[in-house]
Image (cartoon, rainbow, N blue to C red; front, side):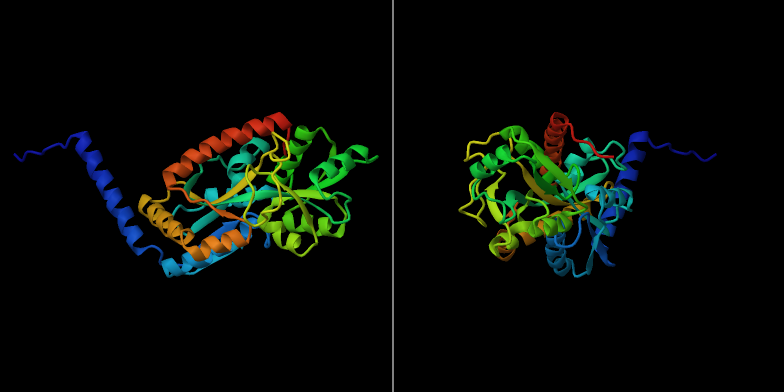
Amino acid sequence: MKSFSIWPLQTICAVIAGLAFSISGAVAQTYPNKPITMIAGFPPGGSADLLARMVSQKLSVALNQSIVVENRTGAGGTIAAGLVAKANPDGYTLFLGSAATQSIAPAVYKNLSYQSPQAFQPITMVAQIPVALVVNPEVKANTVQELLALAKNQKDPLTFASSGTGAIPHLAGELFQQATGIKLTHIPYKGAPLAMTDLISGRVDMMFDNLPTVLQNIRSGKLRALAIAGTKQTRALPNVPTLAELGIRGAEVTSWFGVLAPNGLPQPITKRLNEEIIKILSTNEVKDQLFEMGAEPFVLPTDEFNKFLDGDIKKWAKLVKDTGIHAE
């Protein structure tokens, strides 16, 4: 009679784990063997779109595979994030995520279609984005102090535009009101480009926005920059002070963008993408491009990106609760 040996459960688990690792390693060796899609949650011309296209162009060369940027706009970038969260975690769907989609949206939207950070695999941070306070040149204020005086003496409140309810430009405007005691009227738009059109035409008075979105209009004189909402001045506008330097505390806002994928992405693919993107962002050419567009390089290994996200989600949850902002 033949005897059969029974493997211990630990041995079986080890074999299964080894097979899974071998399979994921084999997948990583052939990755990518078809075009990749990079999804941006905001319209063409905004910070997310500019960064997604810059990273995709360089990453396409590094991977020797085409990368198509898709703009899936709406609901402060959460429509795009929801699509990515449900996508196959095979490395062929990437996401240019942001503070708005990953950290702020969970606190602002009651019926969000995804959970952050659980639904995503962070790959690497890409850039930090200074937020600038800009006004239409017809607004009779050349400094923040003059803007505050104007706002306090106006019969009707000054208006400030945003790219949507709960987006960073909206939160920045709310924090600015809390910190200064002035009253403004919020005018939300479906994306920064639409808001920018009305700001330049004078239909609205002012706006907080990501610097890459407004920088060219500042340089051309179509907009006037009064301050940077972050904690330090920016190389792109060295003569523009920060709100903190002007004595306005509690209104500091900085945005960020990073590359993520659906949760479950094989670790070897995560590692390769992280390494390739960090290489790209470490070149002087890309650093100069980022500085020129008003962004600042900000790379993080995957594990540090995870830790950063946890802290950022808690920070914005408190700010959203304090301001009482919510969106449907």
